Image (cartoon, rainbow, N blue to C red; front, side, top):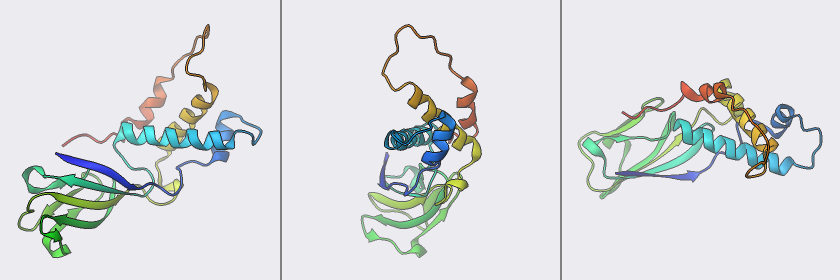
Length: 176
């Protein structure tokens, strides 16, 4: 069982407050802090639903790898920062990494004991690197969260736009 921990979150969000305000038709600055939090919540939900990191962030994965290889949980993987096992940090000559989609770190010989892999994942450091369908999903979700800020609304009929969730479908990480 491998456990993943976020070490360094993204430094920016995939969409700006200005873009979210345009989507939600907000013409004042009173709620900018709230809109910023809603963007973060929508991004985190998109990452949870897809299994992807959207903007560059650092992850640590730790445990006993199945079959010797460590399948990295956050895609796309950009860089492996370090690999260590019970012997300590391993030089890059002791392991090989396949980055991008279906990322994996494999030992040249074998890992011993508990393995820790620190890696960077995401589409890049800039919001524009995130695929447009995911950015649109975040905008629509943040706008919906802004419009429906209460936990429940009595006497209101709402319609769910199922096509919005379809924007994420092709980006969902399938377990190997």
